[in-house]
Amino acid sequence: MKFGVLQFPGSCDEIDALHAARLVGDAELIWHRDSGLCGADAIIVPGGFSYGDYLRAGAIARFSPAMESVIAFAREGGLVLGICNGFQVLCEAHLLPGALLPNANLRFTFRQVELDVVRADTSFTQACEAGGTLSIPAKHSWGRYHADEPTLRAMDDAGQVVLRYATGHNFNGSVQDIAGVRNEAGNVFGLMPHPEHAVEELTGGSADGLKIFESMRLAVEGALAGGSSRA
Amino acid sequence: MLIRPKAGILDPQGDAVERALPALGFEGVSGVHVGRLVELDVEDAEQLEPMCEKLLANPLVEDYEIEIVGR
Image (cartoon, rainbow over all chains, first blue to last red; front, side, top):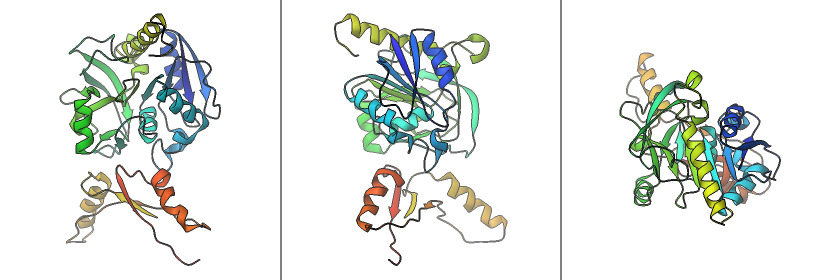
Protein backbone atom coordinates (compact mmCIF):
# COMPACT_ATOMS: atom_id res chain seq x y z
CA MET A 1 0.00 0.00 0.00
CA LYS A 2 1.02 3.61 -0.45
CA PHE A 3 0.77 6.57 1.91
CA GLY A 4 0.71 10.14 0.62
CA VAL A 5 2.18 12.68 3.07
CA LEU A 6 1.21 16.31 2.49
CA GLN A 7 3.84 19.03 2.68
CA PHE A 8 2.91 22.67 3.22
CA PRO A 9 5.23 25.64 3.57
CA GLY A 10 5.88 25.49 7.32
CA SER A 11 5.36 21.74 7.73
CA CYS A 12 8.14 20.26 9.85
CA ASP A 13 7.14 16.68 10.65
CA GLU A 14 6.53 15.38 7.13
CA ILE A 15 9.90 13.59 6.95
CA ASP A 16 9.26 11.68 10.18
CA ALA A 17 5.76 10.84 8.92
CA LEU A 18 7.27 9.59 5.66
CA HIS A 19 9.78 7.48 7.62
CA ALA A 20 7.06 6.02 9.85
CA ALA A 21 4.83 5.23 6.87
CA ARG A 22 7.75 3.53 5.07
CA LEU A 23 8.17 1.15 8.00
CA VAL A 24 4.82 -0.38 7.04
CA GLY A 25 4.41 0.46 3.33
CA ASP A 26 5.38 2.82 0.51
CA ALA A 27 5.11 6.56 0.98
CA GLU A 28 5.52 9.70 -1.06
CA LEU A 29 5.45 13.44 -0.33
CA ILE A 30 2.68 15.55 -1.88
CA TRP A 31 3.43 19.28 -2.28
CA HIS A 32 0.56 21.53 -1.17
CA ARG A 33 0.08 23.00 -4.64
CA ASP A 34 -0.39 19.60 -6.28
CA SER A 35 -3.94 18.42 -6.50
CA GLY A 36 -3.10 14.87 -7.59
CA LEU A 37 -2.67 12.50 -4.67
CA CYS A 38 -0.05 10.22 -6.34
CA GLY A 39 -2.42 7.26 -6.29
CA ALA A 40 -2.09 7.07 -2.50
CA ASP A 41 -4.28 4.58 -0.60
CA ALA A 42 -4.12 6.69 2.56
CA ILE A 43 -3.21 10.31 3.32
CA ILE A 44 -1.25 11.77 6.23
CA VAL A 45 -1.58 15.48 7.00
CA PRO A 46 1.57 16.08 9.07
CA GLY A 47 2.55 18.35 11.92
CA GLY A 48 4.22 21.72 11.75
CA PHE A 49 3.17 25.30 11.22
CA SER A 50 1.50 25.33 7.81
CA TYR A 51 1.45 28.82 6.31
CA GLY A 52 3.07 30.11 9.50
CA ASP A 53 -0.05 29.36 11.55
CA TYR A 54 -1.28 32.76 10.34
CA LEU A 55 -4.84 33.69 11.31
CA ARG A 56 -5.45 30.37 13.15
CA ALA A 57 -3.50 27.12 13.06
CA GLY A 58 -4.61 25.19 9.96
CA ALA A 59 -6.99 27.86 8.68
CA ILE A 60 -5.15 28.66 5.46
CA ALA A 61 -3.79 25.17 4.68
CA ARG A 62 -7.37 23.98 4.49
CA PHE A 63 -7.77 25.88 1.17
CA SER A 64 -4.66 24.50 -0.56
CA PRO A 65 -5.13 22.49 -3.78
CA ALA A 66 -3.81 19.34 -2.08
CA MET A 67 -6.30 19.70 0.77
CA GLU A 68 -9.21 20.20 -1.64
CA SER A 69 -8.26 16.83 -3.11
CA VAL A 70 -7.91 15.28 0.35
CA ILE A 71 -11.40 16.51 1.27
CA ALA A 72 -12.82 14.81 -1.84
CA PHE A 73 -10.75 11.67 -1.09
CA ALA A 74 -12.11 11.59 2.48
CA ARG A 75 -15.71 12.04 1.31
CA GLU A 76 -15.25 8.96 -0.91
CA GLY A 77 -14.14 6.98 2.14
CA GLY A 78 -10.35 7.30 1.82
CA LEU A 79 -8.30 6.96 5.02
CA VAL A 80 -6.93 10.28 6.29
CA LEU A 81 -4.72 10.74 9.37
CA GLY A 82 -4.05 14.22 10.75
CA ILE A 83 -1.26 14.69 13.28
CA CYS A 84 -0.94 17.87 15.36
CA ASN A 85 -1.13 20.69 12.78
CA GLY A 86 -2.72 18.09 10.48
CA PHE A 87 -5.44 17.55 13.11
CA GLN A 88 -5.99 21.33 13.20
CA VAL A 89 -6.24 21.38 9.39
CA LEU A 90 -8.80 18.53 9.36
CA CYS A 91 -10.93 20.35 11.96
CA GLU A 92 -10.72 23.59 9.97
CA ALA A 93 -11.78 21.60 6.88
CA HIS A 94 -14.77 20.26 8.85
CA LEU A 95 -13.66 16.68 8.19
CA LEU A 96 -13.53 16.29 11.98
CA PRO A 97 -15.77 17.87 14.63
CA GLY A 98 -14.55 20.56 17.03
CA ALA A 99 -11.57 22.89 17.06
CA LEU A 100 -8.11 23.24 18.63
CA LEU A 101 -7.48 26.27 20.84
CA PRO A 102 -4.37 27.64 22.59
CA ASN A 103 -3.15 25.43 25.44
CA ALA A 104 -4.72 26.41 28.75
CA ASN A 105 -1.20 27.08 30.13
CA LEU A 106 -0.42 29.39 27.15
CA ARG A 107 2.88 27.59 26.63
CA PHE A 108 4.42 25.56 23.90
CA THR A 109 4.84 22.25 25.68
CA PHE A 110 6.90 19.25 24.63
CA ARG A 111 6.58 16.08 26.69
CA GLN A 112 5.89 12.38 26.48
CA VAL A 113 2.19 11.67 27.11
CA GLU A 114 0.33 8.52 28.02
CA LEU A 115 -2.83 7.98 25.99
CA ASP A 116 -5.70 5.67 26.88
CA VAL A 117 -6.91 3.70 23.88
CA VAL A 118 -10.68 4.19 24.09
CA ARG A 119 -11.32 2.21 20.92
CA ALA A 120 -9.06 -0.50 19.51
CA ASP A 121 -11.53 -1.44 16.77
CA THR A 122 -10.93 1.45 14.36
CA SER A 123 -8.97 1.69 11.10
CA PHE A 124 -6.36 3.72 12.99
CA THR A 125 -6.05 1.74 16.25
CA GLN A 126 -6.79 -1.89 15.41
CA ALA A 127 -3.15 -2.84 16.07
CA CYS A 128 -3.44 -1.42 19.61
CA GLU A 129 -4.42 -3.41 22.65
CA ALA A 130 -8.02 -2.78 23.76
CA GLY A 131 -7.95 -0.88 27.05
CA GLY A 132 -4.20 -0.34 26.69
CA THR A 133 -2.13 2.83 26.60
CA LEU A 134 0.26 4.43 24.13
CA SER A 135 3.33 6.44 25.15
CA ILE A 136 3.88 9.12 22.51
CA PRO A 137 5.48 12.59 22.43
CA ALA A 138 3.31 15.70 22.15
CA LYS A 139 4.64 19.15 21.24
CA HIS A 140 2.34 22.04 20.53
CA SER A 141 0.92 25.33 21.75
CA TRP A 142 -2.54 25.03 20.14
CA GLY A 143 -3.71 21.62 21.31
CA ARG A 144 -6.69 22.25 23.57
CA TYR A 145 -9.48 20.26 21.95
CA HIS A 146 -12.86 21.95 22.16
CA ALA A 147 -16.35 20.99 21.04
CA ASP A 148 -19.67 22.22 22.38
CA GLU A 149 -21.92 20.02 24.55
CA PRO A 150 -24.29 18.81 21.80
CA THR A 151 -21.31 17.89 19.61
CA LEU A 152 -19.62 16.02 22.48
CA ARG A 153 -22.81 14.04 23.14
CA ALA A 154 -23.15 13.18 19.45
CA MET A 155 -19.49 12.12 19.37
CA ASP A 156 -20.02 9.90 22.40
CA ASP A 157 -23.09 8.32 20.83
CA ALA A 158 -21.20 7.62 17.60
CA GLY A 159 -18.06 6.39 19.39
CA GLN A 160 -15.86 9.08 17.84
CA VAL A 161 -13.47 9.58 20.75
CA VAL A 162 -10.60 7.18 20.00
CA LEU A 163 -7.85 8.35 22.39
CA ARG A 164 -7.90 10.24 25.69
CA TYR A 165 -5.03 11.65 27.72
CA ALA A 166 -4.41 9.34 30.66
CA THR A 167 -4.95 10.78 34.15
CA GLY A 168 -2.40 13.54 34.74
CA HIS A 169 -1.39 13.83 31.08
CA ASN A 170 -3.95 16.35 29.79
CA PHE A 171 -1.46 19.24 29.88
CA ASN A 172 -3.26 21.37 27.28
CA GLY A 173 -6.71 21.46 28.92
CA SER A 174 -8.62 19.48 26.28
CA VAL A 175 -12.30 18.97 27.04
CA GLN A 176 -13.00 15.50 28.50
CA ASP A 177 -9.27 14.65 28.10
CA ILE A 178 -9.84 14.10 24.38
CA ALA A 179 -6.59 13.46 22.49
CA GLY A 180 -7.79 11.82 19.26
CA VAL A 181 -11.10 11.79 17.40
CA ARG A 182 -12.46 10.24 14.27
CA ASN A 183 -15.31 11.25 11.99
CA GLU A 184 -18.66 9.51 12.09
CA ALA A 185 -17.83 7.33 9.07
CA GLY A 186 -14.57 6.27 10.74
CA ASN A 187 -12.20 7.01 7.84
CA VAL A 188 -10.76 10.30 9.12
CA PHE A 189 -8.76 10.49 12.37
CA GLY A 190 -6.86 13.29 14.05
CA LEU A 191 -4.71 13.51 17.17
CA MET A 192 -2.42 16.11 18.72
CA PRO A 193 0.39 13.78 19.95
CA HIS A 194 2.90 12.52 17.37
CA PRO A 195 2.85 8.78 16.60
CA GLU A 196 5.42 9.37 13.81
CA HIS A 197 7.99 10.44 16.43
CA ALA A 198 7.51 7.20 18.40
CA VAL A 199 8.41 4.48 15.93
CA GLU A 200 11.88 3.64 17.30
CA GLU A 201 12.59 2.81 20.95
CA LEU A 202 15.88 4.72 20.77
CA THR A 203 14.43 8.13 19.93
CA GLY A 204 10.69 8.02 20.53
CA GLY A 205 10.46 6.89 24.15
CA SER A 206 8.59 3.89 22.75
CA ALA A 207 7.63 2.41 19.38
CA ASP A 208 3.91 2.68 20.21
CA GLY A 209 3.29 5.18 17.42
CA LEU A 210 3.98 2.49 14.85
CA LYS A 211 0.69 0.85 15.84
CA ILE A 212 -1.24 3.73 14.26
CA PHE A 213 0.50 3.26 10.89
CA GLU A 214 0.27 -0.52 11.13
CA SER A 215 -3.49 -0.19 11.81
CA MET A 216 -3.90 1.91 8.67
CA ARG A 217 -1.97 -0.65 6.62
CA LEU A 218 -4.24 -3.42 7.92
CA ALA A 219 -7.33 -1.33 7.08
CA VAL A 220 -6.18 -0.57 3.53
CA GLU A 221 -4.98 -4.10 2.80
CA GLY A 222 -8.13 -5.57 4.33
CA ALA A 223 -10.25 -3.34 2.11
CA LEU A 224 -8.17 -4.22 -0.97
CA ALA A 225 -8.45 -7.95 -0.18
CA GLY A 226 -12.17 -7.52 0.36
CA GLY A 227 -12.59 -6.15 -3.15
CA SER A 228 -13.53 -2.65 -2.02
CA SER A 229 -11.16 0.01 -3.33
CA ARG A 230 -11.06 1.88 -0.04
CA ALA A 231 -11.55 1.25 3.65
CA MET B 1 -13.86 42.73 11.59
CA LEU B 2 -13.48 42.18 15.32
CA ILE B 3 -13.03 38.52 16.22
CA ARG B 4 -13.04 37.23 19.79
CA PRO B 5 -13.43 33.94 21.67
CA LYS B 6 -17.07 32.94 22.15
CA ALA B 7 -18.51 33.56 25.61
CA GLY B 8 -18.03 30.57 27.87
CA ILE B 9 -14.91 29.29 26.10
CA LEU B 10 -11.79 29.40 28.25
CA ASP B 11 -9.68 32.35 27.11
CA PRO B 12 -6.29 31.88 28.78
CA GLN B 13 -4.85 34.93 27.02
CA GLY B 14 -7.63 37.14 28.41
CA ASP B 15 -7.14 35.58 31.85
CA ALA B 16 -3.40 36.28 31.74
CA VAL B 17 -4.01 39.94 30.86
CA GLU B 18 -6.66 40.18 33.58
CA ARG B 19 -4.15 38.91 36.14
CA ALA B 20 -1.42 41.25 34.89
CA LEU B 21 -3.39 44.50 35.08
CA PRO B 22 -3.73 44.64 38.89
CA ALA B 23 0.03 44.13 39.14
CA LEU B 24 0.37 47.51 37.40
CA GLY B 25 -2.11 49.13 39.77
CA PHE B 26 -5.23 48.91 37.56
CA GLU B 27 -7.93 47.66 39.91
CA GLY B 28 -11.51 46.55 39.28
CA VAL B 29 -10.83 44.92 35.89
CA SER B 30 -12.82 41.84 34.87
CA GLY B 31 -14.12 40.06 31.79
CA VAL B 32 -10.92 40.55 29.74
CA HIS B 33 -10.95 38.85 26.33
CA VAL B 34 -8.25 39.08 23.71
CA GLY B 35 -9.26 38.78 20.08
CA ARG B 36 -8.00 40.13 16.81
CA LEU B 37 -8.80 42.89 14.34
CA VAL B 38 -8.84 42.38 10.58
CA GLU B 39 -8.86 45.58 8.52
CA LEU B 40 -9.41 45.50 4.79
CA ASP B 41 -10.65 47.49 1.83
CA VAL B 42 -13.39 45.81 -0.12
CA GLU B 43 -15.65 46.98 -2.94
CA ASP B 44 -18.63 44.83 -2.01
CA ALA B 45 -19.41 44.89 1.71
CA GLU B 46 -21.78 41.94 1.22
CA GLN B 47 -18.68 39.76 1.03
CA LEU B 48 -17.62 40.54 4.60
CA GLU B 49 -19.89 38.10 6.38
CA PRO B 50 -19.04 35.08 4.19
CA MET B 51 -15.36 36.01 4.57
CA CYS B 52 -15.75 35.79 8.34
CA GLU B 53 -17.73 32.55 8.20
CA LYS B 54 -15.35 30.80 5.82
CA LEU B 55 -11.92 32.03 6.81
CA LEU B 56 -11.38 35.01 9.09
CA ALA B 57 -13.21 33.54 12.10
CA ASN B 58 -13.91 29.99 13.20
CA PRO B 59 -17.62 30.21 14.08
CA LEU B 60 -17.32 27.08 16.25
CA VAL B 61 -15.23 28.94 18.80
CA GLU B 62 -15.24 32.62 17.82
CA ASP B 63 -17.76 35.46 17.48
CA TYR B 64 -17.19 38.29 15.05
CA GLU B 65 -18.48 41.80 14.50
CA ILE B 66 -18.28 43.72 11.26
CA GLU B 67 -17.79 47.47 11.31
CA ILE B 68 -17.93 49.39 8.03
CA VAL B 69 -16.02 52.67 8.13
CA GLY B 70 -16.32 55.19 5.29
CA ARG B 71 -16.45 54.18 1.67
